[in-house]
Length: 156
Image 1 (spheres, one colour):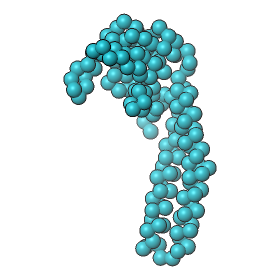
Image 2 (cartoon, one colour):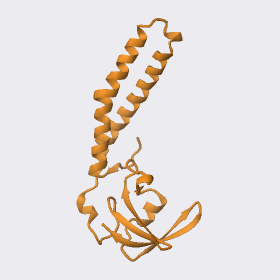
Image 3 (cartoon, rainbow, N blue to C red):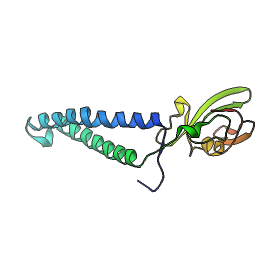
Image 4 (tube, rainbow, N blue to C red):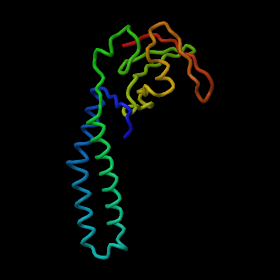
């Protein structure tokens, strides 16, 4: 990991803890059992099940290591950071208007970003221009389709 700070909401932290617990308590033991079972099938050089189980175990162990670092280093976004009407910060839910179309986004840390669910990273082009802005201000973002201008309608 780099020296970059890891920001998470309480909800995001809970989701990562849940994933970590599931990997450690359920998935890893299941895959270890598959590795052991496949190992008992004989010649490991031609044992596809063994190779697949080992590969999955390597992936799970890598993800566990990554989650341990994230959970140890995470900075939880305080609820007070979400105060309505103030400047946009990490954890703020923002209503934007662009060409008469309103959209709501929540500004989150990069580990929690999920654009399909309107959770945008504070390091994304839109997230960067929103930070520090207030209701009534306009921001401009360069998108693949061209420049988009958003008006900030609400901040929670």
